[in-house]
Image (cartoon, rainbow, N blue to C red; front, side, top):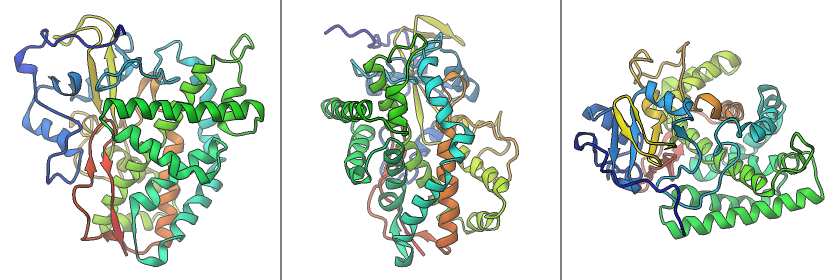
Length: 405
């Protein structure tokens, strides 16, 4: 097989820009996976550096460079970007396609995730949050990841796609393998399994369409009135599967971890349960400080960027957690200010590929917090957390988090 998107040997990288850094590896004793990124900043490594780990890739550490990596698709493509490199890799629609081609499926998805559309989902989101929380509220404890943060967004995905909730554990297993495994054979097998599930789903919706998102995608037509290419339909389903589950799960994990260790923050939100504007303002700050995703890009051609030589197919990582704490952009960036008025965080990206589901993600977090605080008294981390529960990678987070009240 000819590999078209493999990076070249790093003989174009000067020695002073090479840093030994593995973003999948969390050292023993580190309790917050984001700290491996902020440690780079504290150490004063170059703001654009190269690591030979995971197939070799660049890392941007400046807010301005990270934003440029998002915006300038003429250099930094979203097409065929995985780290470590995998070929062939699904061309997810629209996220894995550069402008202007990305507009076809982005225009299809965008109306389903506008603020107005998401407000129309609020009753269902609220109902599901209440049911999950009340299943353990009187027990005085829970594993927040396993009993809420994983199950809530995945179950909502099944509902929005018109799938039965009985398949929740199946989809959780598929998602966890996709996001956690670094074994190439296991990852390739997992992708095949996800696509098989999506193919069956879309064929069923093609024969018996409903009002769910999967039905809208499979019955839509291109500007000439023809059905979309079947592979593109599957790739769009794949994007929605992988994009909306793990990031919401681990954003919630980070936020609840902060609340569990900060009684004053719990009270701040309890005092604003009847003030949605102030509540959302504070949620935005927690979105800023708890950005969990590290986004990939691929260099389209040999070029120079800010004095650094890039080669075609070089990979680049844009760590949102670093951008969101850049002191040139945010005043007192490491301080959590729940009344922060100006908040230009990049948690959902910027530019043509800004997360189309950002309003839904925020609504899930906000409603979950509101219903939790109405039903759960002051809560804290349980002292008997088991072992190393943190992980790195494209999405950082925690595999378990015991809370008690």
